[in-house]
Image 1 (cartoon, rainbow, N blue to C red):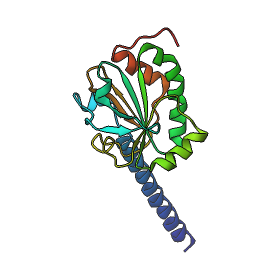
Image 2: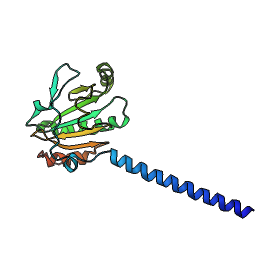
Image 3: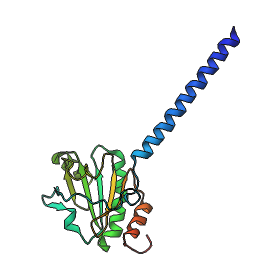
Image 4: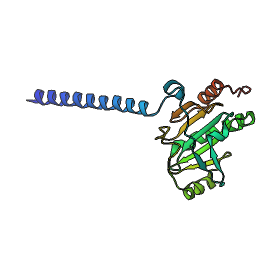
Length: 185
């Protein structure tokens, strides 16, 4: 009788282990799928919509205003923990690349101006903070998770679009791909 119970227990453990493994594999696939891929590999010729967004300073920006420049756009939210890490990475790159003409924009998604303004008081950006409270820029680009970083080339085409943390070296490589060269960093 004891052996039969042990066999059932072992069988149950194996079944639960298999189920857990299947769940983990499924979760890993879902995360990998939803974290995105560079736009160059996924959507050759993806263009951002020609919308204009208000900045916290009151001016309006549109990516079409920046044709001829390479632009890094950071899509973020105030409640997103990883967005803070991405902002630190971009801060370092801003200091390195802005003297070479690269424009940086921080786009707050789906949040009211006052919430963003209060957040930025404690965590200021060196570059313009735009408000996409109605998701007129982010939604057509498929930006649904945060942070998401986009690089737009001088012709106004999306050269890189990635959800999740974009490491410094990846962004440097992508900037080289669109023709931005700086000294060793």
